[in-house]
Image (cartoon, rainbow over all chains, first blue to last red; front, side, top):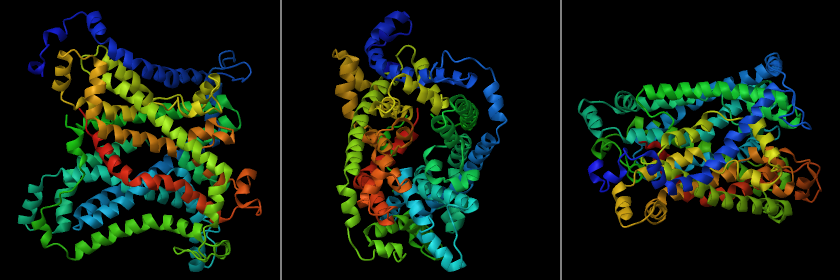
Length: 313
Length: 306
């Protein structure tokens, strides 16, 4: 790059730091407000974590509330509801992974194999759509379809001769939860794999053709091996999020009848903290989740980097 | 370092057409069946809701409606459109989304541009500073307590300021800025342009596709997000459309919600709920054709790394 810099000497790293800083003053000025946003809204709230080690009193405020050491953590580790929420979080994520992970790969391979570009484009347009619907809209659709008056129950009662309460029964609820996840994300997930497939050297396809491969053998011996690095990285990144769960999907889909399987860390923290005002307890639960999640994320990123990929960023 | 534009086109080439010519046998049928099956499964729930929303109340109660509306009428839509609280939520959501998108884009640009400059002293520390919160955050309660300390609870600012800059989007933008040939900026700098002039006169005009993509990222996220409204907002005047929809679908005994049907029925009918769902989906559907193109590009820009 150096030869293309007409002012190489001026930018020499041997310039004193202050001089270089002064030269970049405009850049720092641009950075100022965004960095303030990070400081105020991402770093400052971390001070609130002290609530997990205090007996928080809203009237005294967080700084004046008395320290209680690890009492709150002992309390959450002794609380079966906490373990249940943790277990459900991991279980729902594992099911999502099991059923949600292969679908985009299969769809991407098949979409790529489609001969009609028109059919393919229309299919993609429809398959991507659920990604843009909010969880409230999806939750609304789910209750309309799987609720006790919904069409799913109607079909089930005709076929089975009895009512199937999809959203009231723990096993059925779990199935619906996982299905909805696949429904929402399978199409969108194909994009990254389609990009990987389109980067495959077409010579390989032609060589396989010469060797007499049919379509299935081409998929198994050329396409899939060529996109395996992408698959592995996506898998590792997913594994890094095994203890992280968004708030909206479980919150919108859950109901009081199925809390044994539907209560997850995020909804548990919300209820304990913001509804029941047990701030110390909820902060400790959230903090535990954050720390475990961070370990998973860092491990996943490290794993992806070891494989020669760029990791998350 | 690959320019976003060249990578943005997703899959138009297929295995050579010579190859395809012979292949439309049994395997081709299976492929079509699977893909079209997936398309149908994706579309059916939405079509069912559409049918419910346009059907008569009695037909819906009698469970006669599947994919084709019965006793077609648009009464439910009239009720939803005419409802004051629905209009208010729609207006608030539109205002919030537009304001948010403008400020979020400004924030991302101002953050991304300096960070793509290798000559910026301390760049790696600054990168670390913005990356750390992606891995570790305080969580719901510390953030709530902080918003409360700032006296932002139940104010629209609580839906703008904490989420103002997305680190993920910013890094996408930074990578895009980084892919612009440095010689362009250098020649401008020799002509006496400062960093700010280079940004506004050279970098931004070259980045219009990326900026459009990110604006849509921001707008859709703000439009769809519900969690922070749930946490921070109590007054119905600051309900977003999503929050309002949540009340309609999941809390239909709420008095304000009940007025949707003129308070005639103890529980809202499925027709009204479906119409409300469609009402909240319509804006997304309206911009979806643009979205799809840009979003696919955006995912690819994001996948391109230095």
